Structures are given as C-alpha cells and as structure tokens.
Image (cartoon, rainbow, N blue to C red; front, side, top):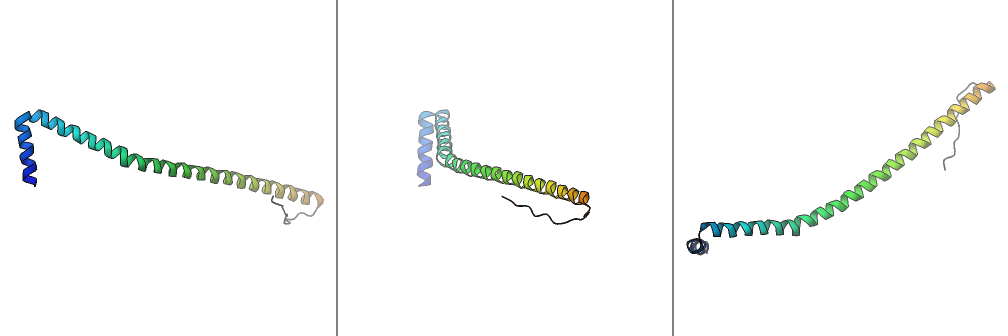
Length: 103
C-alpha cells in the first residue's frame, strides 16, 4: 500500500513537476493545520475562556468579602478603643470586653 502511494506521488511529480506537487502538498498541510485549529483548539479556548471568567468573578467576590471583613474589623477596633477611653474617663481604667453586634 505504501509503495503504491509513493508510486502515485512519483507519477504526479513526473507528470506535473516537483514545484507544483510540493505546492499542492504544502497547501494541503496549511489547510489541515487551519482545519485542526478551527475545529479543535478554538473549542478548547472557548471553554478555557469561560472557566477563566468564572474564576475572575470568584476572585472579585472574595476581594469584596475581604474588604467587608476589613471594614468590620476596623469598626470593632474603633469601638473597642472608644470604650477603653470612656472607661478611663469614668475611672474604671480597665480593659473590659465590649460586646459588638454584627449585622
């Protein structure tokens, strides 16, 4: 089978010449690569793009959560410091626990 294919290629070269046959083979190679890219790789890239967008959204949500938690922590620290100042002003002078409602 392989010998027959080589014989056919040899006949084509003898009939049309090497430059024409090699140009046609190169054209087939370019078509094959283009076809492979459009049918296989583009689909995988689309799926990867969807996954990437989902991950970016999750990172943004986590970033928003971190910002909210930081604001709550800052508020808690401010309230604790204010309570300590009130306690010192009233003469209690201690570090009492402050109960903060989180909503």
